[in-house]
Length: 144
Length: 179
Image 1 (tube, rainbow over the protein chains, first blue to last red):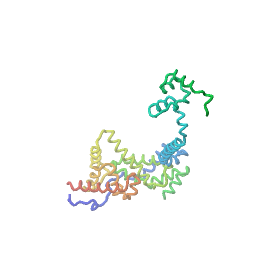
Image 2 (image 1 turned 90 degrees about the horizontal axis):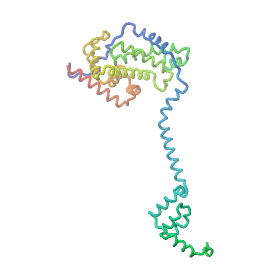
Image 3 (image 1 turned 45 degrees about the vertical axis):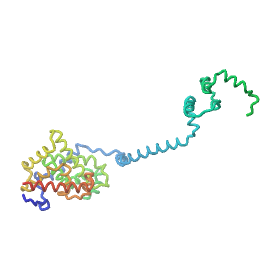
Image 4 (image 1 turned 30 degrees about the horizontal axis):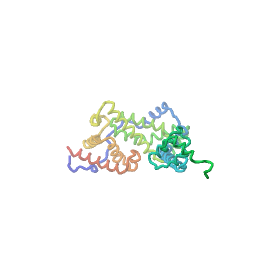
């Protein structure tokens, strides 16, 4: 074979052959089979299904982005006081006793504690001393 | 008859069979030769061509007319060929080279093949290419389709097709030079 062979130099030729009158018979053979295969018209939604499938991915993405956006928007709108209301008193006390610099008066209105002795504990006084302290103030003379 | 006219007739139940018969007569040779060059054997090509048209019959109503009818037919035929060659390998646990060897043997022994030495050698060289590269080569070289049309059929970029065809030509020329 020549070493400088180029495909473009070779004439194009179909070397394959078919039996005599093959293409005359083929349509009838296929039509016979289509009669057996039956024809099932496409359902009404078939035409819409393909473009819908193509649009599905961006739609889902858009939906997820929308959900994330609106949930963030909602969180931003919530008042800090409302959010804080969901936190239990004990948790607030734990936090404050760990991180905050507190004064005795900070605990004055914590009336909802389940264990009243806890207030005394935070004030670092005995209950007797606390009672004595309360006796010292005459409530009817205090101005509000 | 124009494709549009065939499709309009096919949509009407009264003229459906007539339209489909016309569609077969218009495209049977293109589809058959496309399949035959891939599977080599006439009986296999005959079976696959019939299967292609049965699939067309069942799905023609879903055909979107924004694509060309013949590229859609080519795509169905191409898928049938690839499925056939793939199932042949799986069925007989054959590696790619053994299927190529089997098809090469058919070129030597089939009664429906007639070509001189260089033409036979070209067909054997083609069988050494991967299936998809052989498809690209056949559609460009024999069917003279545009790269854009092949791209629509195979769902591959034009750039990749050009590279694939270029490599195929080089491999074929190298194979033929070997003797």
